[in-house]
Length: 377
Image (tube, rainbow, N blue to C red):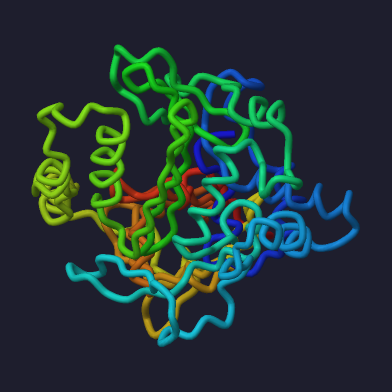
């Protein structure tokens, strides 16, 4: 699968866990098996269903009874439903229309094993200790064996041919293991994984040989998480005097994406003076994608509006850009803009539609480019 393929199934969506797992079969293959590394979320939904089939009970119950309770992670849960914004939670924040704003929690319950677990930093520290001690909870109880730890942390595929996080040419390896990214940092094996949803970015970081680890939790989409991670990594590995000022480096304006400048660049390349081939009503139709399902475009109060049948958050207005290309502004402003363009058949009817992100830094979970929309008869 390509990077993040199928994420539109769970992002702001109403598909159930089983529906997501069942629709994976329709995702188009991008590579031969294990030919390249690409991170993907929806396959964790498949793993979730496998656990439920074997255990004959919900993934939530299994995780609670097999992991959370034994470890003592009393704050942890497998759902964000019912959270009170005024409660004792770190609520997510994101830049929307140029300013930092409170945003809604992503709908992650349906992804389950891919993103639904949440916990306090104290409970995550307990989880790190259990990881570093090969599953040991106390003197008499283990969740897994040292050999299983080796299996989990054993690299299965190189990340250098995909979205690898390590660019240092002196690094000995950069691999993806069983749910962990592993790489070499100046002779230290790192075992790590991030978590990212709208308005929150996290990381778990382990240095097994030093029996050290840490957790970084943030409630905004900020490069601060990376700066803190690298600073702690250098400190724990004894490389405190590298001369790297990560905070200044990641806070610098040049490290932030300049949306206004990119929009100006787009506008300068725009073909001026073109009009759509059809009246707006000619683009109104029900479209079908093999793995997502139905997407509709319809005239509403004189505007062309796109709606994803199972994703209320993906509702947006189409503004003509050039020829038969439109720019989609989603009403949920934390959803980034997308292009949508139409192909006409020999009878002059809009027969196919494609989409892709407008901005190159759009999170890979907005995999508009993987849709193949054909007009429903």
